[in-house]
Image (tube, rainbow, N blue to C red; front, top):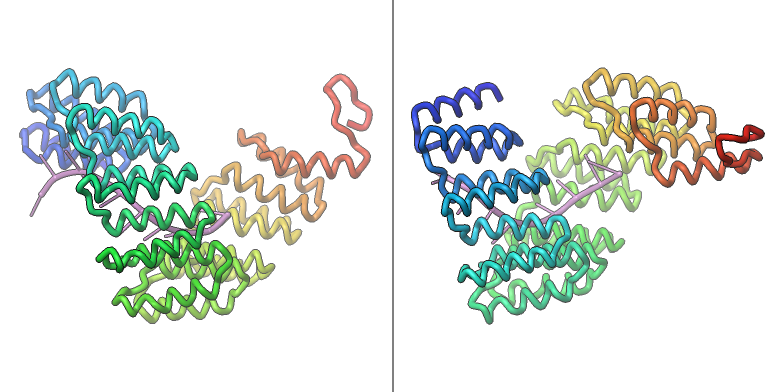
Length: 392
DNA sequence: TTAGGGTTAG
């Protein structure tokens, strides 16, 4: 990070034309604040930022939900007589769609058209994603179908977006129909198209169909990638087909696809769900040897499962280990642990975790609260206000 | 080598 700052300062002081590239890199490296400082310095030095510089920062701000600053930046662009182009508008359409604000995204498109900036394929694909996210798949389909009439040829990404939209909204048959349309429209399948459809089939519980489609990839000269295998492994694990999942783990390694932390997360989660916590724990312990560092989610899965197994001391040890490794437990970690303990009716242990959770500034979720109240009621306790003390 | 779109666990 320090090196990047030094480089950035060097660029500015020498007035290199590469400053926009630095700003873009800073935004992509989550250092939007530094990018903004750099922008201010550029202006001070008399270097006028162009539409590319502003767009880079705008995307950075939108990606991190810094809406107020994004709005201020647009005002600044207008003040500096920088005209927004289709890419800049698409950044805004994308930001609204990702937040599920499709009406606002539609308004942005309306403004674009009023300014004679025609929406392009990316605009439409983004909107298809947006409609899908809020469950408006019929609207997404209509939009896709309207593209040729507007002189735009839907790309494979357009199809991928709607296939994904259908799958995420439980409309696998519609997704399958669209999947079959791809070659008829003169488009080539992409590995993402297959990944999306395989995921959709597994998600709908159609494990055999998902597996069949996976095996069909080579007929289109497509090579399964890491995401393909992760989808496949997850589908199998959710169906408790753990042995088959491990077979595919070996196949992917043989094919030169290196499993990542997600792969092991899927397998560990699958093992825990199948009540094979000991094997899961061993696999978890082997991760550092594979050059992989467990993350919060992975710790949560293991510690939560240990709680559910009643192995409270081991869970506590792992919680300490987790913190020592620089991985701070979050509210999900505590909630999952408490849920596990309550499932085993370990009320006092659950209370200890709850106390610790509150000390850390987290709150129990609705499931934990409801489980707690049920178990307290079973014990003849009742919820009451702070004034009364009997059996409360 | 100046900015934009699609897929995976919890």
